[in-house]
Length: 425
Image (cartoon, rainbow, N blue to C red):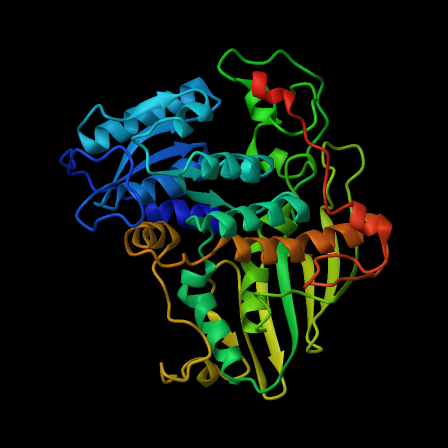
């Protein structure tokens, strides 16, 4: 089963009983009292924004959805109606422009589930508006991710990433076993990511009346509308909007790889690899690729397109699995059955899923499962690989300074130009 299909089916069972409406203060300062509902605004309610994030939050009885926003009119209105049916109230409204969500004083937190090129721009604007932020991964560039992480730290704000792997038992158990020495000294990690299709180029077409295409494009380079462009399967293969399966699926399995290697707060020191962009297609990111990262401790991480899997190899055995949350595989399954004393365990305890974790953090003031800094470290590893493929040569990387030492061409690719004229849309 595909990861997103699995998630949608697992979260689709919404409790049918209506939730009693409650009056919530317009702005909750600091921690939220446990007895009060957190008020939420959702920006982007497409496949993942609705099927995973909104439906998961709707199952929590300590939050209330006040607004849903999307550039597609029909989509936001349909989702608004679904929320109203679920709650039995007419409190939730459909909003056309995300800036109107950020401007509402009665919304405590926003959930951003947009295409990747919008993540940091919207998150920064939400922080500026004083909102707590739950945002999907990944970032689009190294530079913008650093800008976001620094802004969150400077404001001491709550920012959580819509990423689940550290709360999924399969990946938690693998990382726990490796960190605690079950396979001896870790030597090599292999990660397989799905190979995405090549999509045909299309002729420009009239923008549907249902869509605000200017707000969909936002800070991305201006281009003409084509019929399939706004489909998530398509825009993820276009560099202006995303980094393909490397930054999408890679954000999942590469995170587990780095956690198991104690490198989730740093990153690799070198990378090399190749990638192939399918000719004659709309795709502008590699469809097929093979990357090899090297870490300061000598561990190598190989990331290859094709099938989905993760495997850790050590001096005393190996562990892993195939597919999303697939059954455990190992040189000896007893390696994964070991229990560790909480007092000496080298991995943090398993946390609840990211939506529940976010609400808990709002109320107790604790850091979320994935912070802005964690997002930056993870996304940067993936961006460094993409830059190596673009330049077609091995690269050295300094994870402390976040730069390619003495490499002007590579350093120039840490950022990209953005547009500001979308603000008039």
